[in-house]
Image (cartoon, rainbow, N blue to C red; front, top):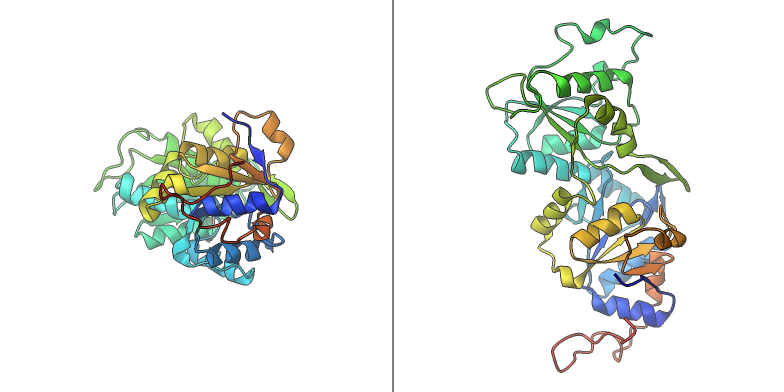
Length: 335
């Protein structure tokens, strides 16, 4: 694999602009950091739209539903429609419904927040756990009595779905553990039955997330105690895993040869693009630093300091949109 190219001149940006029709963006570390917009990101998105580019936001964020994320886009002044937003929470709900054919009379135990709950509701899947008051209480020290009561565990549960949970507690972990280790838990999840099979699904396995200029434990880190204790390997939906890629392709019908994925993380965004046969652009406003590319086997196609740099592209007719004799759009030879 060729080394990534660091883009730094208006000519570089113009070449990039002419090469791709669809721009897929990660959000955390690219568009925003925590609840603050990354400088120049809004102008960059507007600039791409102004040049006829299709923009799609693909995020591992599972704390918010798509309508909740749309409100965040609006508040930060970034143009986006709900249909242009794909989160790992929504992808997980769609995966349960359409791929695993989750029975309508079974429930999902949520180890997560409102975003996951809302997306499960959207596709008509029953749920418990999550933000329910009974599952957000601290247990008395060394007291397991409430967890072994007859009504502590719902026999209708047929899946445990884990995402980002800022209210994670030991009681939730214990309930999830019981569902995933009960008799027959690794068998099929059947309609009209109780107990038995129980799917184990992670919205994403991000170890850290960027916010407020720092890194914090992500969904993958929060699920580690459950993975270690149950000795079960979960299905991971979010980037860079196949379920998210399949969802992107099915929803948006993209042309991989004319698409580029913009991200800040080698192990999620860039690997996701690589597995999806797409080019990738690493921006240095989030998790990965330029020097990390020298020690990793995962390389982006291009590197840019900040997505805002794209607005410096030279957009004269001699550089952008010139059609060659073979019908292709002209690209500077340096790319």
